Structures are given as C-alpha cells and as structure tokens.
Length: 313
Image 1 (cartoon, rainbow, N blue to C red):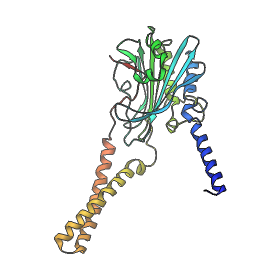
Image 2 (image 1 turned 135 degrees about the vertical axis):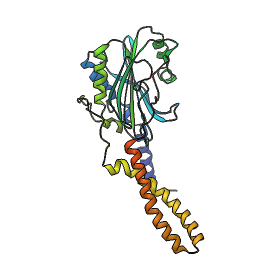
Image 3 (image 1 turned 180 degrees about the vertical axis):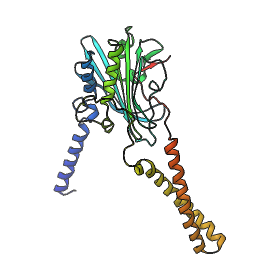
Image 4 (image 1 turned 30 degrees about the vertical axis):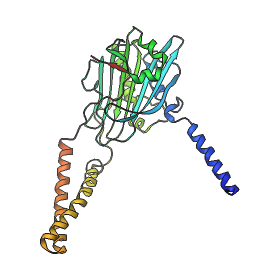
C-alpha cells in the first residue's frame, strides 16, 4: 500500500488533470478567441447585420482534408429569433509547413467570384480575400462538414431560396496559415462588400497565425508590397540549405571515405580526399541552392482546404 503522502499527491495530480481537460481551449471560447468579434466589429462599420452574440457550433477538431493536410477546424454561428444569420468557419494548420501553403483557388483565378482581393502575394506569403454569391441548389450545397456540425438546422438552411454570400480570407507564410469563411445573407454589394473584405483582410496580421490574439486590432492601411522575409538573409535563405547539406554530407563522407581508403590502400589518403571534397562540394551545393531560391523560388500551387459550401460551376 502506498504511503499516505504519495496517495495525497496522486489524488492532487488526478484532480489537476481533470480540471485541465475540462477547461475550454482558446479556440472554443468566444471570450478568448475574438475572431468572430473581429468580423462583427468590422461588419458594423459597414452596416452589415452581424451584431449579436456568436456561439460555438462545432468546437475545434482536427480534420484531414482531401489534400491530406491536417487542419484544426472550428465553426461559429450567429442566430436570432428568425433562425441562423451567419456562419463563420475558422481553420488553421496543425503541423508547420516548409514551403508555404499557396492561395485559395478563388484568390488565384478559379471559379467566378464576385470579387478578389490580393493584399499581398509573394512565393510564400499570402494575404487575400474573396467573395462569391450562393443560392442553394444541387450545384451549390452545404458540405458534409457543415451538415454534420449544424444537425437539424442544415436542412432548413439548405432549403432557403434567398441569395447568400460566401466570403473568405487567407493569411499565410512559409510555415502556417489561417483561413476564414463567412456565410451571410446577401445584404451588401459593390463597394460596401469590397471594403468590408478589405478591412477584415488588413486586420488579419500574422499574429493571428499563433492562435488566439489578445485583442481585436483596428485595420491598418494596406501594405504597399509583399512583406520581407522574416529574419536575416542567412535565416531565410541559407539556414535550411546548411542543415540539408550537413545531413547529406555526413552520409556521403562515410561512403567516400570507405571507397577512397579501399582504393588508395590507406586511411590517410581517404581522409584527405574527404576533406577536399567536403569543402568544394558543400560550397557548390549551397551556391546552387541560393541561386534557385533567389531567382526562381518555389511557389506552392493554389489549394483549398475545407469549405462551408460546395459551389460547383
């Protein structure tokens, strides 16, 4: 039998673990995740009817997309006495990427959106918005994700015959992305809708990629050009190449030493050959990598993750 102090310690640990598991994660609490508040605050400036209290319809869960990317998805809803007024889908990557995520297809020229907005777009950094008109038909219907989250409400929403607008934003860098989709009744158009999309896009600073920001930011003026890569020239261009080269050279050096020593008949000659080849080959490899990254950087293809509405043209 365990001594009394150990029993007390074990009981305290179990109670603490239970408390942690029962606590709401930041993305599942409206108070702690102000993304819905951000959208509602900006909408109020443009007279869009998105005032009220957002509710968490589907708490965050990890979903594997058709492109085999694990994304964390949360669905928020805005209701009143007449029923559902708006849906907001928030998704972000679970694991960091290495070469960026690319823009959504609606920002890259796909489909027939009402508007496209490119705030900036470099080979790895993207901030864009888009909007497309939705009328629920067999060609434009709620996705299984929305049906599963909405339950009985999904049928009533899909049966509506009025026009809706699906608005999306994406902000991403080399490692992470944040993707928002807002489904609202078509109450604003033209310059009002464009300015709303632009204001939300400008508010989605890269701090949103880290999870739950501390406050709702005011929209800054649009940046004049794509942002510079974070960090120094060494960090952004050569650090990955150096690590990749180092691991490669370890394996090649072992192989070269064995072959050179066997052919020369002594280990000293094999070691000298390795020393010369490591210096020259590493330099050539890094130079080649730098030239490609500078003059022809790899740009990810456009990709969509999860959508609220499957609007097939």
